[in-house]
Amino acid sequence: MSTNPPASAPEVDALLDEIQAKLFEMLGQVGEYRELLQGAGTRPDRDTKIMLRALPGAKYHVASTYVDAQWKVIGAALSEIYPDDE
Image: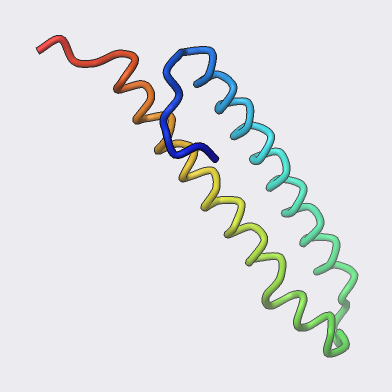
C-alpha cells in the first residue's frame, strides 16, 4: 500500500478494484468459516475448537482493516483530485 494518495481518478479506480477483490475474498472467508462450523458437529476436537474461536475471525479482521485503510487513502486522493472551491 502506497503512503502517497493516488493523484488521478484512474488510480482511485484501481484502488476500488482492490477493495472489491478484498471484499470478495472476505465473502469467501465467511463461507469457509460456515463450512468449518457445520463440519465441527456438537463435539469438535481441540484443534477444531481453536480454529472456530480464533483464526477465521482474525483473518477477517486483517482483511477488514486493509479495506478500511484503503478507503482512507481513496478519501484523501479524492480530496486532492476534487478540492473544495472555497
